[in-house]
Length: 165
Image (cartoon, rainbow, N blue to C red; front, side, top):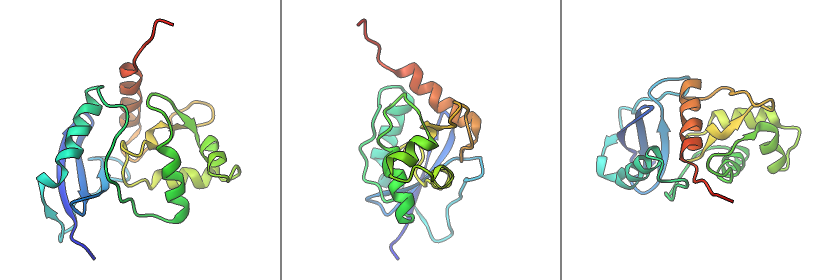
């Protein structure tokens, strides 16, 4: 097993734990919520390993970045990886339902499985699981808590470029 490095990024939604192998990002964890994580005892703190991640997160939270360009290494099942790749196709400022994602991955009856995979996303924000909502438009569970999800969606709505056409 390779060495895991970590750092913390102070964001508008709290201190985000960043972790990875020094080249690829494999985890972003919110400070609160059901999916909150802490560094493992054998992880090594290395702030410089995440310089580009922090630059892009700062630009995202500043409303200047709509698409991340980072090397990622999420760990999951084949189905989870399929769902997480589908999440990356949801445009900035837009939302999709769990059913939409299920249809996109070729499993139209798997909305609940999509919801479970969405909830296990190890790299939220960058892999935008916050853009998935209930079929009726309701905000549903989110690893960082519903207030955090609402904040991210509102940020993206406020930052959308407008046109006069």
